[in-house]
Length: 103
Length: 103
DNA sequence: ATCGTTCATCGTCAATCTACGATAAAGATG
DNA sequence: CATCTTTATCGTAGATTGACGATGAACGAT
Image (cartoon, rainbow over the protein chains, first blue to last red):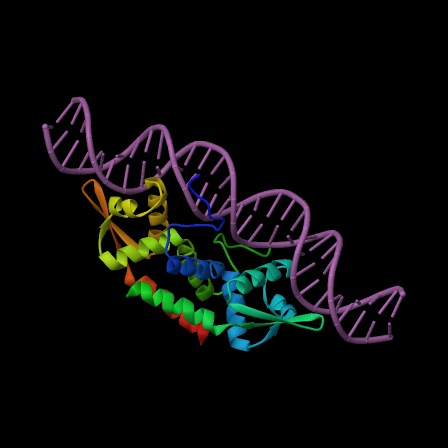
């Protein structure tokens, strides 16, 4: 047995992993569009976003989950709705990581 | 008939598409690592990159192609080798697009 | 001309992603 | 309580991605 740890291991650095994860969350135009809506209009209820997107509700919800898992977006349950807003710190983090890549 | 053009069409803006494409190219730690190597060490022959990565030559070559297609990297054939270097303008473009998202 | 080196591409398999309809869960409302 | 609205999740089908070995193409050296 050459591997005793249970954690997933990769031979890449943390910064590489972190940047890749953030980039992956932005790697679909729908998610970029959602994020743009949220930074422009501040808070949005899920249904408002769905109305702006050429996608089914289930698909938008799935993209929102990806953005939330990446920390780019925060969701707060508000009665029967869910209110989403952008999390600027994550975007700034992404910008910083890209900047570090440039040198 | 509601669609006469032959080009692929998306309902997203160009900026959304462009950012998504650049992000997608960075959406794998191996590609981030390759890009970091290239910005740190300037030019690199493909084999040097392969030696630094825990991946087969074919896989690294495939990742290099993704980076090249996204414009993040340039490759120049030099005899039997191929010399790669980062294309900083593309990274700056990415940074700018992310910045525009923040507002 | 025949090697040996270097790299890109092909073929392929497993895994992940994207999209959607259907359904479940949670609150509001009558 | 029954119902409507809103959103998340399930299940699934098709497409794309990531990994590799094998092979091919291009060049330098013997």
